[in-house]
Length: 246
Image 1: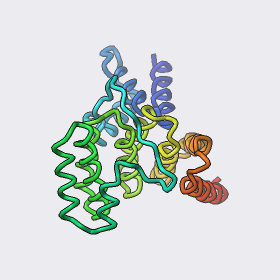
Image 2: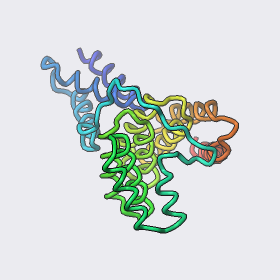
Image 3: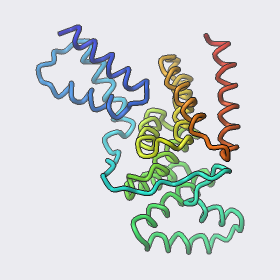
């Protein structure tokens, strides 16, 4: 029984450090639901794992549905069509027109409403109002949980602004599950693993980090120049870091 529990703890950990966060959390919950489990170090580790993830918002994360949604395609410069409303505002600084367009989106279809919340989230990021941005990203995902862009953008925001890497890893996993051919999501996942290594000093995340960036590189099109450059820079930084640390 002890060996079996130790194996399950290892399995939960292996799933998590490879980015299969949803499965890791579910397995831990399933094990704890088994009333025959005796108290001990292994059970305590599983309880701690679940407590950590739930403290980072795992309970409230929306579930995706079977609805097929057309996924957003990244442009050469790294932008997305859903951000055009905000890009127009940045170009003109016409806050009245920006507000009007956002209101029109909020009065539209579910898809338009989700786009409005995403637009407001990105606006609040620029305004450095991070708490408000968090709320808006969450609303966009609630309204349209099958759109990878909203999961990926939220994960990227957390990663860039030192938010919870545990939540970011769960969000980017969903973006990848919804749109695995988009190299951006794999690149962000690698960045989150790097953040986790820096925060925890746990090198177990390293193989998944390298795999994520390798997947991003393979999925890049010839036109995705900006992302290719970012990947090259990141790999250089990682190579230097490994020389110092390993």
